[in-house]
Image (cartoon, rainbow, N blue to C red; front, side):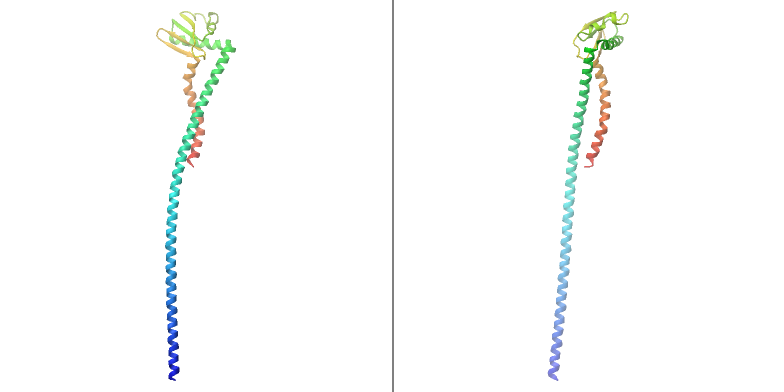
Length: 214
C-alpha cells in the first residue's frame, strides 16, 4: 500500500510539473506572440509614417514642379501670343500698304478722289498760305481742273518722297498737318491693336485656365 501510494504521489507530482511546464510554455508563447504583434504594429506604424512622409515630400515636389511648369508654360504661351499679335498686326499693315499701292498705281482716278479730300482737310486745319507736299507723280491729281474753285489760292503743290503710302502733308507758317495715309494709319492703329488684343485675349484666357489646372 505504501509503495502504491508513493507511486501515485509521484505520478501526480509529475503531472503537476507537466501542467506547470505547459502553462509556462503557453505564457511564454503568448508573451512572444504579443511581443511579435507589438513589433509588427510598431513596424507597420513606422512604415506608414515613412510612407506618409515620402508621399508628402513627393506631393510638395510635384506641386513645386507643376508650379514651375505652369510658370514656364504661361510665359511660353504669353510670348507666343505676343509674337503672333505682332505678326498679325504687321501682316495687316503690310497688306494695307499693298492695297494702297495697288490703288495708287492702277486706280488713279479713285486715288485722286481720296488725295483731294486729304489735301482739302489738311488745308482747313493749317490755313493758307501753305505748301502741300505729295508723292512723286501725284501732283497732277491736284491740278486746278480737278479741284473745287479757289483750291490753289495761296497754295503751292510740291512733289516729295514722303513715305510711299500716299496722301499729303500741308505746311503753313505755324503748322504742319501730316495727312499721309501712313500717318492716318498710325493714328488708327492703337484702336486696331486694342480690338485685336481683345479678340486674342479670349483664346489666351482659355489657354491660361488650362495651364493653371496642370
